[in-house]
Image 1 (cartoon, rainbow, N blue to C red):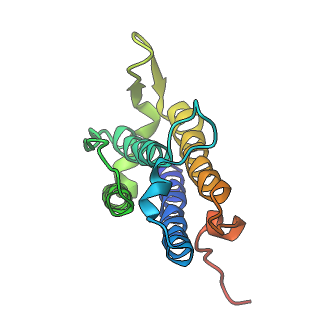
Image 2 (cartoon, helix red, strand yellow):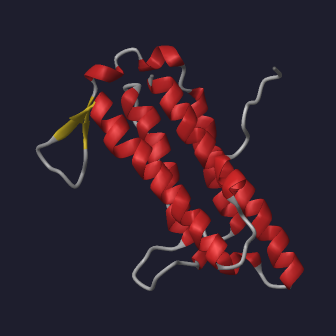
Length: 168
């Protein structure tokens, strides 16, 4: 279950690169610097597009790491440009995909501590289903919505990403 769930979160994160491709094309068509979109937000009190991607990456790498008894790689959260955001996504995907199904063998027994809940922990299944999966999708959806609000022609199929169809 853990390998498949984290793989699905990676899939969602990879879809953000599709969003970025479309954002670049849109910026070229409209003749503006695509990096303007990196600071976009849906509301004044909401975090930016870049933050949304950083957070999605953080939940993917943390889920892969903590559930496989590893420490997550550290990212500095200093991305400002579309190219830097792409690098962040790719580093995260590379790490998450390096974790094998066998490394999740003891995920049910993992206890994950959260910095904002001192003295408490979440067991592996709860951490995956109540923290990792919903947060990855929340932040990817917010990144999608920020670009969409700014005129980038992303749609549902972009959000879904590549679908592994088989012939019938």
